[in-house]
Image 1 (spheres, rainbow over the protein chains, first blue to last red):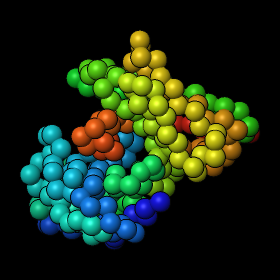
Image 2 (cartoon, one colour):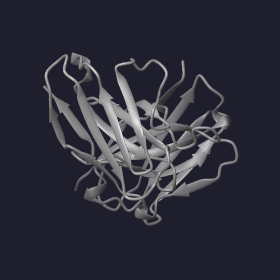
Image 3 (cartoon, helix red, strand yellow):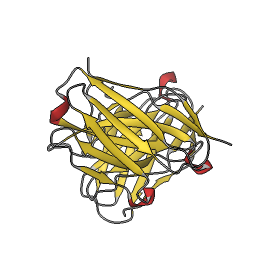
Length: 107
Length: 121
């Protein structure tokens, strides 16, 4: 089973600032990496797949990069609606699909 | 629009079983798979298993130790998840999520709203 590790656990930023979230895989997942956003009481929402492709309707301020074992999600200028928990997930070698522990982006 | 609508919250006693449904609309059910993912309070997302909406083939997480069964009714575009021998650690929100069968297989692009299952004596 591929273990996904995210850092930091919590990221404190101000609106308008840049946020950089990291995700590491225990073995190579190629570019088969997705990012999800989850707000309290809601289901996760797909943001990025293929490590860098934005899902339909996702604003351009969200960008993903990386391959193999190291990945980054960048939010270029945080808006109020971006404060949430972000999860990475690998789909290169499954079952099982595996998720990181999440990064909480807070004000 | 494409959506997945799940059944409501459940409260069960230890040792009982729970059945959660997931009704799909806005797309051809048999062209996609449905995954089940759960999230215990304050915990990460945990994949439980999936069912191919077309041929009904299922795959399960070994962590579920044979307690989970996923099925489907193609005529109604509904997927079901049954979890048996419930214990307190199964208290969680249970989500269904769609994934494509070929391209982007494994990407969970549409999610249900979640169903809270509480296991308590």
